Length: 106
Image 1 (tube, rainbow, N blue to C red):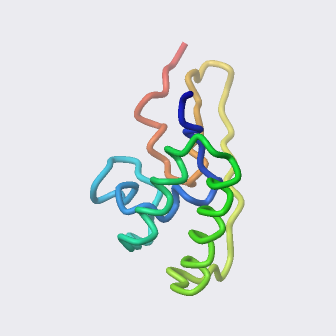
Image 2 (image 1 turned 30 degrees about the vertical axis):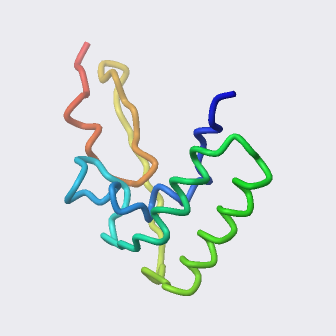
Image 3 (image 1 turned 135 degrees about the vertical axis):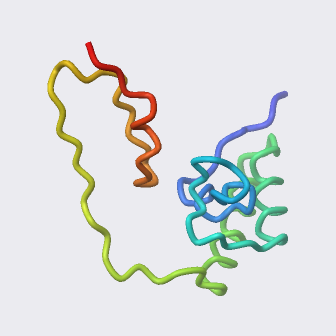
């Protein structure tokens, strides 16, 4: 049986290996790092037991709640407007504008 290989949506935002310093386009913009958190999330990703994965993700969320790696003061809306001549628009959910390097002009 294969592992679940899924993450809850905010897990990526806090994994050490998702820091832009370690991975281009990484989504851990706060550069938060907690080895215990990383270990728990990695275990959750690689387990085949959905109940166990859920328990691990709850623990991961508790760590984030206690560590409070950042406080959101506001969140601006991102909008992209382009003509039909611009192609390959794939907006990064993190809000980073790294997608512009892959744009095409038709």
